[in-house]
Image (tube, rainbow, N blue to C red):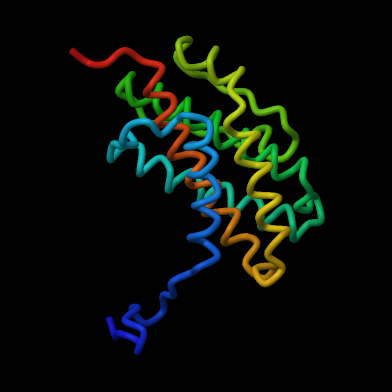
Length: 178
């Protein structure tokens, strides 16, 4: 691929807005005490993240085209809660040696059912992390009008990090392997 003068590969850009959106979620995790150790990762969780975020952004695009939803605070909050719940499902699927199958139910309405290992599910139902992320993202996005044209990009990046850190938080609820 051809390089641009900035060093980026042609067809790709480096997005300050996306970096900042990710930083908002990481800051929420740090402030909540969830990042006192390196983030737990696994190739299977990265594949699940990609699959889920593509489906979430496609559903958002379709909902906006058909006028079913706008990006108000409740919808954004629902999306963060939805992605967080799906991270619990992804970790549970990983430990059960199966592929996660993400239902899109509850993406926009705040009623996302989820099925996860009981050690994870109980904790996730009480955890404020997705609400904290959504509030911080909402506040950050509205304090940066210069990023208005990048709403889907920044939201997608923030949701990606919510999922990634949700997987990390879910893994913390399980016993360490011996």
